Length: 127
Image (tube, rainbow, N blue to C red):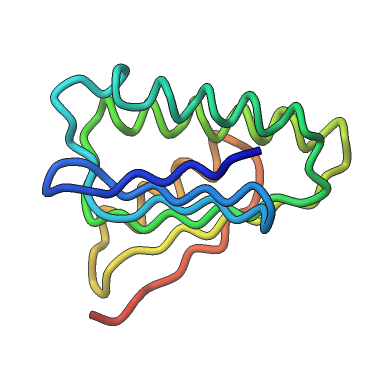
């Protein structure tokens, strides 16, 4: 399976999903004009990736900002992965990174973790 690599812009996050290392990274800022349109191919890639039956999955998300619609898209994406991993007993690690003193992004990570009922590693990054 091919990796999914999308270069970020000022409004779009960088996506680096590596199917062979099972490391899925989202970094930057997510305020696309049409979030569903932006996240749709990412979600499709994840569905295809999960069909390869990975034995482990690591997700690293480090965003300095995401709007409400992007949050919904990220949550849907994470739910797909979590729903796959639980019945298949696949090891999953989700790392939510936030910039030093960014209490809003820290709280968002905690909210997402509680919605998914799976522990996140919530990590402050010194800038």
